[in-house]
Length: 441
Image (tube, rainbow, N blue to C red; front, side, top):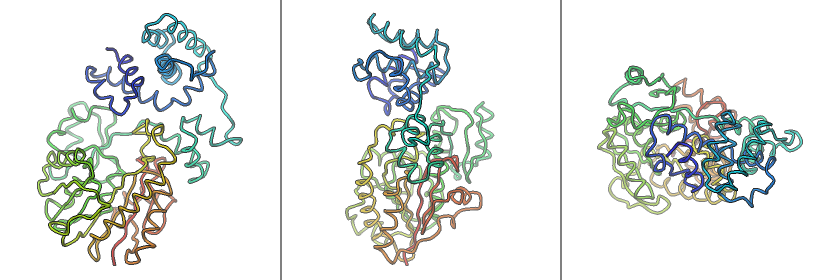
């Protein structure tokens, strides 16, 4: 199977999120091309459809799915990757078996090839939401949310930044190696790497399969974005303390908390899903943290008032399930999977989680609430409602727990309030996050 055939199957079957199985026979540059074709076509599908519609004699809804996805894949190669027509058109046509389909796709692609896919967009001043939605290929509701929430200039920057390829950042397991040693080891084996933007991190300068890197199986590092690393640093876990990571899967923050605790004290990690809890156990095992305890349970309900829950916790991290609009560049399909109607129900569940876990926090203990999304409802609305209903929770600046370099990532965002700050991707270069911190009086 060629890269294009594998990508075509993934797109046609709607298997973007589980494409690994489709790509298993591919290696090296073939797999990289297949990944690029899938992620790029998925990301740009709205603008691609606008291009197709401008050059097709048939309405898009009337097209057979095989024809439509072949056209989308061909447009991405021709217009977005700049692959010459003789290569992009012929390889796309070869994906189809019927003569009539081949002729139609060939004609549409060659027509747009002559004009390089040019289409007219609405003016940004006339209709900024539709302009942003088409220009950067987002559903209108996300474009509108970004513009209304952060202003036109910032909203456009968020849309644009969400289409950039994300960096690969590694968080080094300080109990096994150092960033300097890992950079040296990777560079010696031809993997270009440099020190990352936050303490203990390393940035890879070229895309690779991380699981094949030296040191992965030994637990010397985990893949974790700089913003996610900051969350655990804001928690500020210390050796000997009792810490609860509430929604722990897949385990990146749990292993970071374990490192900060230097293997001492009580660390409890929970998740509502048993298979995802197994991911946390695997991450802890690979990193060599044997003192942590992983439990399965719904944190909106009561946990047993015994065992590690009996005395309460010095620190609780609630990295809540959310709409994920801050990590769209890592999950291009997310923009088409989410619905605006999802947001209120997510905010409601996040409020229930906050109210429930707060009961397990010791007097003087620290609670950190974080999400990887940018909606007001899931972030400051939920947080401020929680503070209003719990007068014993005193907000603290999340930046107080950070070193100067890390604090700058938080300070770069003008969007902040009582105990909370946003990390905006186009300012930080990292994923979009909301981080809030409060101490129980």
